[in-house]
Image (cartoon, rainbow, N blue to C red; front, top):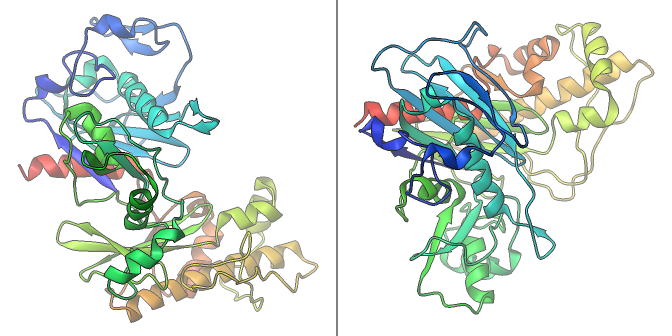
Length: 421
């Protein structure tokens, strides 16, 4: 999910440092003890005491020296709030990166559980502080993306959470009977992890006053901390392509919206088109269970990607698959294992490519636009032999995305939003 805020008057948003209170600003001195490396008014790098952020990279897409900002130029900020941490990317109208960085979430605890709302809030303002001050004042708009179906129920008067955040991967099966009684057959809300199931579960089990309750997604709530307007949202979502990371996640740009809970297929609106996709439980995490990074590199070098593997596997970490096969009882299949580790790895890589091909075939059968080119992000995109295997199996050109971070996609949407104003 993604939400954004547009600032037509640039000087309004970042003339001073942000306060961790929504809609308010404070003097620069508030951050004097935060321990960050920041530019002072003379554009000199100064050190603050305290914990250091994860290092940031400043410069263009080609890792050159820091790119200068033209007089009167505006910049566009994208922020990606993932599962374990958050990133930002600051770009100009040409898509050149002027600053980027990341932070791991601090684990604030409340009643022996992680206080995610507090962690996200702290990370948001830490990332904003990480932006060099001479660039901060040039930000024209911000887009924030978060994990889909991560839900907050807040007080509509104060914006404060009435309940702990319900995370993207949490399931509320107790709400399914109610939801299925009102939803169309096979709709994506008919899944225990859907936002509607989470809302219904809270509604039926919490005794608090519900008159002032307001449902927000993670990105909406984070942006409320900046603009102070509750109930503002955005139909766009973070730009993602096929991701070969820990799992195999697919996003297909389609002219047709596809929703089918049987296979975990859903659509995110992107202007006048749809990002249709789903996520398999296969992927790089299975490889990491079997091989080290060094082994993956050395064994991959010995694979002939033009030669088909006769091994037929279904690599899974644990029992259960969701897309393109919906089978919660599916067991991992990695037999027979040949004596050659090269052949074994080849078989796994090719089997994952076949699963990817089956996923695109399923999306087409469900009515999505025919795929004609694949761009890939994630660790698997770096393996050239695997890329050639996928090209052969898919019968399509496969290339690594120029920018693989969701924060960059969010920054592009921030730019797009100002173009439409």
